[in-house]
Image 1 (cartoon, rainbow, N blue to C red):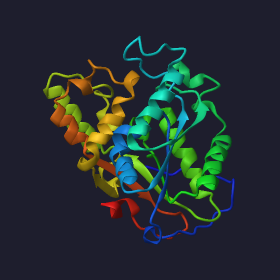
Image 2: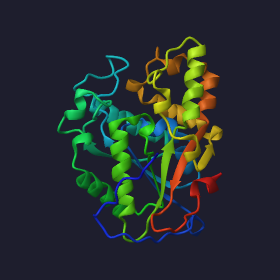
Image 3: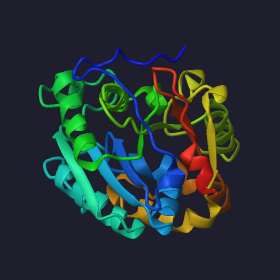
Length: 288
């Protein structure tokens, strides 16, 4: 069962909200754990938002310090964080997004790895402090929409879960305008389908092939489905700038291009309604 984190005590909670119809330009704040987390699950939607004249800010909680290095000529373990920051900026330039920010935490690595214990990593950070940084962004930008990870973290990455928890707590603690809070979802059925297609093609899935039922969002959790085929070329070009994370010999690269294009052409979200009982309209659905 998916549960929300406890409400933050940073602020007393009230909710006011505006209809998207009242604004010609929406302000969107995306908060993800690592550079490239925005790509697969929401890249098409971000491209659509920019193409339709809305304002998007992307924030990475960590610098992706312990991610993959697909080619040793691209980065070293020591400078990977700097390289990934620049990759993120280049990827967002493709989208037309110029406001790219980093909270500066160290990547915590995959669940159960020694990197989880590094005192500089997001997983070890004091949650109220992280929430405070996010609350400052909310106060500065006053977004209409906030997009972040869902309660599963996609596949349970500690940084995805921490980012979800702290972003949700900061949003629910707002005293004035509570934005529409969307979680990026990766439905379980999609993981099962893609992993099966990989297996049928003789390709080993990148992770969780033995624990497939433990990853992904419940299929009935999704509230919003976005068909982004009109923006998938922008999405793919943006993704291509995360070079350190794209193994040319990896499972995704080995899949037939039309299969990957089809998979990347639909995105899934959950609209988290305010805790006080107010009902917010589905702004992302209205964009279509």
